[in-house]
Length: 258
Ligand SMILES: Nc1nc2c(ncn2[C@@H]2O[C@H](COP(=O)(O)OP(=O)(O)OP(=O)(O)O)[C@@H](O)[C@H]2O)c(=O)[nH]1
Ligand SMILES: [Mg+2]
Image (cartoon, rainbow, N blue to C red):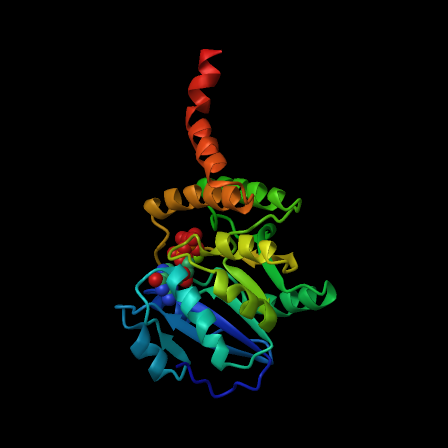
């Protein structure tokens, strides 16, 4: 069980971390706004992160489930049943996002009476080289396809920075199954499906410190999941889904035959 000293403060920032020691060292030098506490959710790092966090008095928790960001997020969601924060902010621990954007997300959440606010990099201030062309295009397409499904224009559904109300966390928790990097896509789709109000606000986005865990195989996996979440959200009969799938595989050949 996660135990925190300052559970009476209003918000908890959860930093999901797997071998992010150089980034954590930089992050912990930064000032965190009042009313926020930090928890590092560590995926059993082998780079000495845990020892460093303990030595420096940072709250951290070791992931019990098998490795994978989705597993970590889902495990955290279950742990919130024992917590009493009003807000939960998810952030990558790779130094790409700023704590100083937290009040902005919270103000947006309150002003728009939303359940979730996504920090959008696509409309925000991006440091040169923070996002390569492949990631930019992939993210743009994923956001377009999935948000259009709900007739919305959300621009960054794979953002590393999210803010949730307590209610949103409670409502989402039973619906999440993702194990790896498709977790953001699933949180977005399940949030919309379950009637949660999702809004977005621009954030700063900096170059990553340390190496990426989002390997090529996860990129392909995410392309599949954009398709999967889109199709399953349509609630069609299974037979129609299979036909749709076969047709979409054959479509390029059929177009050429014409
Ligand atoms: N707790 C935990 N965290 C993880 C796990 N896998 C990845 N992470 C963290 O999840 C965050 C997202 O991973 P990244 O490697 O930054 O992936 P990304 O943001 O898609 O790719 P970049 O553009 O390279 O940053 C990082 O802070 C990782 O350290 C895991 O299995 N457990
Ligand atoms: Mg990252």
